[in-house]
Length: 319
Image (cartoon, rainbow, N blue to C red; front, side):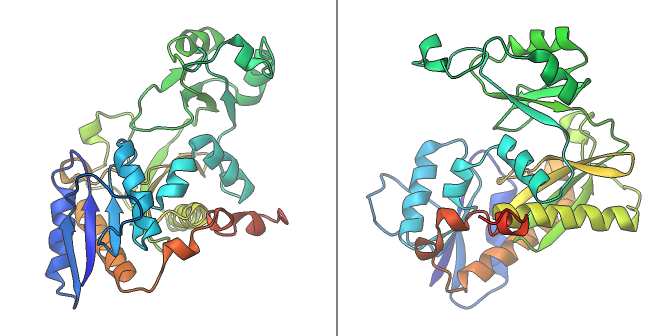
């Protein structure tokens, strides 16, 4: 029996729907279930051929469990090693390298020293920063936001240096980025599953959370749709994510990739709506079954040189 395990946290609609969908297809020797675990013995097989991870970004115990599972041959959606290493600033740099439009972005030092560090730990850091150079490059308005994380936490829109410094003072020891704001006329959030399928949703981040997925949206102009789908696939194939959302803000006809580090994307029916929910449940069910029936062995195939799936070569880096 090739078992598919679902690892999740507070979600109440997507995990059981995914289990039910996989099992309803009655694929020979494939069954899905919620994972139940206790202490984890080192180098012990997980008992699962595939695990769909929806929570390890918040629970270090689960992330370590998944790495151990990979050692035993389990296929984890998404790759826990690369997910642990990735961050949004790197994502922006990679996007520019492979030809996807992104707003100008600068990585900023921590406002406060990280735990167990002092000013002597920062002796390689130029002080004071050349803020004028940063402002000239990024421009205003801009967004100050963490270089990792999600859920619109610790995100500040700033219209001038005074507002930037006031927001920066509130960020503590978080590592932040300053990114040029996009004055968007359209905004899309795309599910990208299996590095093959993309589902484009109109999305309005200015609305309350429950109303951000646009209901009864107008059709998307064909050329824009093709550009958004192509860029979403380009990003997820480069990064190796099998389950992700990619967000695009459109200004002057250009879709700028704003956020694409969402390897456990929102999939709650009450948030995304029934149509989007049905699509993502079906797509991930098909992906998990495909992986379960494959002979892929991540313990043999996961190497740092493979994590970017040839992105450097495709960008002509020659490395």
